[in-house]
Amino acid sequence: MVFDIEEWQAAWIVAHRSPPPDAPPPLGQMVRLIAGFGGFLGRKHDGHPGPKAIWEGMQKVRAFAIALEAGRAAYFNDG
Image 1 (cartoon, rainbow, N blue to C red):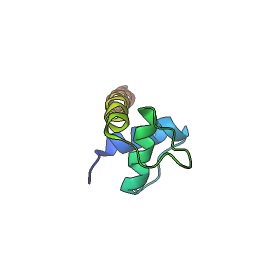
Image 2 (image 1 turned 135 degrees about the horizontal axis):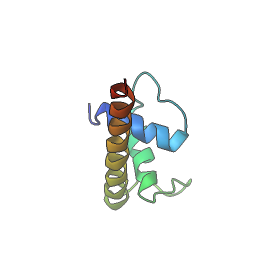
Image 3 (image 1 turned 60 degrees about the vertical axis):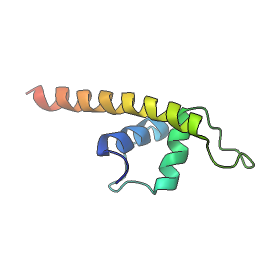
Image 4 (image 1 turned 120 degrees about the vertical axis):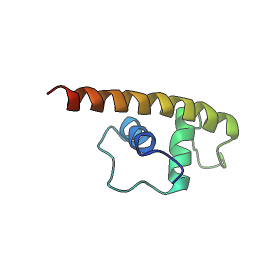
C-alpha cells in the first residue's frame, strides 16, 4: 500500500466528485490522478508525469486527506 486510505479516497472524491470505490485504484491510475492536481494534463502525447507534477499533486492530496479526516471526525463526534 503506497497511499493512506484517506489519501486515495480524498484524491478520488475531489477528482471524480463521487464516493470512492471499495478498493483503491491501481497505482498507475493514482499517480496520474495525483499528477493532475499538480498540473499534469495527461494528453495523448504527454508521456508519463514528472516528479514536479507528482510532488505538487501530493501536497494537495495531503491537504485533501487532512480535510477528509477532519470532516469525518466532526461528523462522527457530532453526536
